[in-house]
Image (cartoon, rainbow, N blue to C red; front, side):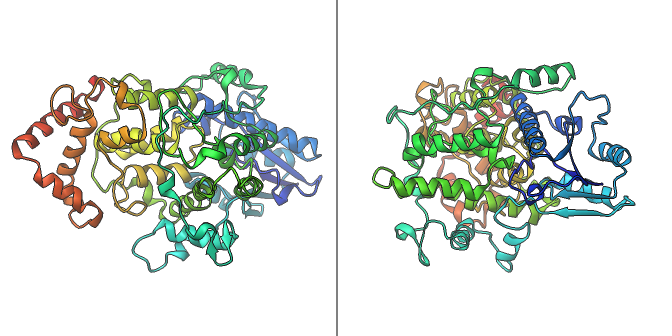
Length: 510
């Protein structure tokens, strides 16, 4: 009997493993405290993964495959992957063990060490999900000093012939990012979010409570937006194409107090759990665009494709190139604690209150909220990246370490010293005001850098540049801001730093 392990983010029905039913193969899946407890997760994240795993196991069984599924409360569940496997090996008199490449370094190492201890043969296969190998990005950038996303993205466009006109990009330009920065002011109307049919959510919440699993955030059974099986994910993709794609690119970076989803697809959880394949998602969107190019512009579609074909694959490549050392990088030597309001939403800063409350309520925030609100403040507050990592990994349903870590530690916190981003993504309140309506309803004054009513982002921004200027002295992209820093009168700079110090000492008072 061959035992095949399926991890919770390997829910790919189209994997070649499942083409043929073989009575000599048994698939195993586990709900485990090993995975619920290594970081404190949002309740919707745990529920989404467990619900998806259960759907997947049922699908395999309905196709005739032999499956052993250990629920979290199963008496025989050892709550740890290797212990569960050993138990099943003995039970089934296993003659071989197979597994798909894990996408988290810790699981990859755990299973490699486990296999070395086995007396039966073991074999690891690809997950058949990603569009690049683990080492493809490393090979692509061999000999280069900087790993520029745009070059990798163009390579991927050519490789998969997506939005191409022969050897040239469709529309005569590779990137429409400048078209993706509009502020949403109430129009056009944003359709309601797609709500998939999910039947076992309450049962799973009760399970987590009875087993004492510690989670964060809340759950609304009527507004649980995560598709937990392939059919629901494909319906979500269709809904995006038919209702949201027309304005996706225009308002890709926008933020608003009354809107959570805007024109975003919300497909990231299904992608990261491998419920759907990135190529079928992109090809589906492009095919819809081809049929409706009279009403949908190329910039909407390119912005979507860039996130999946470029950014997603790029982040995975960075992760496998740089691990395990990447997880401990702290180039800017930041060591402050994460403010308590990240776990409660209790802050007077309107942008943070909205973004964090949305995250707690929905296990979701779009990329600009993550980068330029919660991430921006954490970096300006010089928070230890370990603490920032733990928060991002736990709070978002789509957060798996291969994608979360390089986005957080690299893009958001610049803890890698510029491997991912050539400069830190920090800003004062002006950028937030440009892309949202947060500042108009905030008690703090967007235009002030000092004084009790000054926007905390403003004083923290200039204080950050002053504190960290030695790290940026040779960074050409920071030169203009450092010159502006030098022009601030000394008396005002003293006041800025005094204001910043008050915030850094007691951020939860602001």
